[in-house]
Length: 262
Image (cartoon, rainbow, N blue to C red):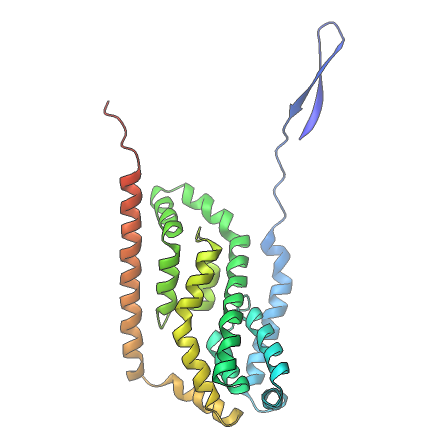
């Protein structure tokens, strides 16, 4: 806001008046983050490829198993970075169980994986939430869906976390573009991810060495028959989410005041 002088007809100076200048648009956030994000993605892909191949990474993982403090620090950092870098959390759950055991691995993975999800959620909110809100304001249907997500955010996130085939890494960013509160997102993510997390950590703890850990990962992919139950579970979760959003939209419509008759 700047101040300008307003002169009078007799040449004397008048009082100061306030004049609000339109703020210039902020520099492109995506453009500023493109280079560091690309560098981090390259590092993450290289680390993932190295982890799946024998070599220094394999020896490092074996060494971490011999030092619980080092393993805990490395895994905590990896979990926090995994959210923004779109690294699948189940890989880290297996590593946590392998390096720290089922109990300690779970106690570390629960808060650390939630922190990683919140980091991606925050990045999505910072990058695209304003744009998504402007887009929703142009369409009554999108505005209603946006409001329903904000009102039922905890239940929607909880159901998504329970869906076997839900792409968690991408959903963290997408949910950041919605009005879901951070507290609801964090709590629902923690509770919804808990069953699968504990099971994955326990399975990782059963591996005798890195070779057995990779074999466990390969066996977990299974064949077409192993996909039937997860697919049915995901379909049921999507139906439940649609029901929750429909109820929220109906409640919002009922609460909206009816215009007076003409």
